[in-house]
Image (cartoon, rainbow, N blue to C red):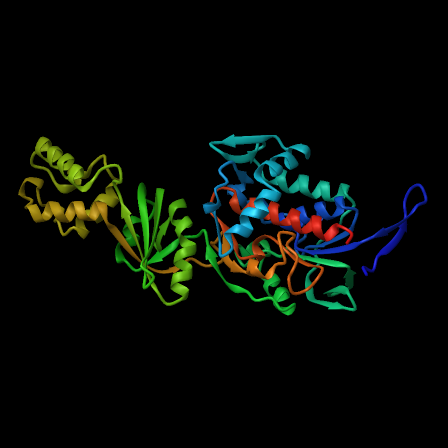
Length: 424
C-alpha cells in the first residue's frame, strides 16, 4: 500500500497526496514534474544547478529546435525500436506542440523543424518552470543529490542538508554530454544502485577526430558532400549528406554528427572507422571527368587549382590535388590519364581515418544508458524496482539532429510523470 501524505484542501476535504520525487530539472524532468502534478501528486524536483532548464538554454544554438514534424523511427537510435515507437504513439510530436501552445508558445515551422517563434530557447525553459510552479511543484534548486535508497516502501533521496522521502522516484538526470550545464552522469550511478545495468555512455552528435596530417590545412573550410562511415570488422556502413565542416582535429558538421554515435560505438569495441566524402555526389565519376576535361580544354594552359576553381574552396582544391599527387605547378594539359584518374578518385573518395570522437564537452548527447529492456513498459517504470521511473537521456535512446532528443525527453518525461503521479 502506498504511504501517502494527508492535507486539507480549500473546502476542508481531506486529501491523500502521493509524493513524487524527481532528480533533474532538465527537459524530461520538468515535463515529468508537470505531468505528475497534473495527476494530483505532491511533486518535489531536485536540481543541482541554480536554475532549471540550463541545458535547454543552449539547444539549437540558443533557439531550441524542440521537435520535428518528420517522426520516422529511424531518427531514434535504440536497441528496442518498438518500445520507442509505442512510447512516441502515447505522447507524440502533435501532443508536444499542443502542450507548448497551451503554455503560450507560438510555434515557428522551419521546413519541419519546430522552434518557439521568439527564437529563444529561454522561452521554452521559462514556460516549463512557470507551469511547474503553477501546478504546485516544489523546485529545489542548488540541491545536489548524494545518495538514493528505497526503504520500507519509501524512496529516500539524500542531499547535504536534508533527506527527502517519496512514494515514487523519477530519475531524469541527463547524460554525461555538455558537462558545463551540470550534467555529469549522476543518474547512471543512481540507476546502478537500484540494480540496473548501463550501456557505456559515449559522446554522440559530435565531431570526429582523424589521423590525416592535412586536416590543419582544411581548417574552416565548408563544403557540401555525401559522407559514408565504414566500420571494420562489422563491414557496416552509414551515409549522411549535407554541409561538411573541416577542422584541425578532423571533421564536423551535421552529417558527421549524425554518424558519430556509430563511430563511437565501433571504436569502443576496438574496430576501425573511416569516413569517405563524395565531394561531388550529384555527378558520377564518368560525368565529373567529362566536365573537368572540358573545362581544362577551355581554359588552356592553367594549373589544377584553376581547373577546380568554382567547384571547391581553394584550400580544399589544394589538398585534393596534393592527395592526387598532382603538382600545383603542373599545367592541366600536361596531365596524363593516371593524373585524371587520381583526381577524380580523390573527389569521389576523399577519405579520413577516424581515431576517436570528440569528448563529452563537445557532444550534444550521449549514446548508451539504461537499456529499455529493463523498463516494465512505456510507463517508464523500472522492471526491477516498483515506483522507480527513468526518462530522458539517462535511457539508451539517442536521436538524430533536428529536435529528436528533445522529443524523446518530452515523451519519456510525460509518460514517467503521468504514471508516477497516478494512484495505484
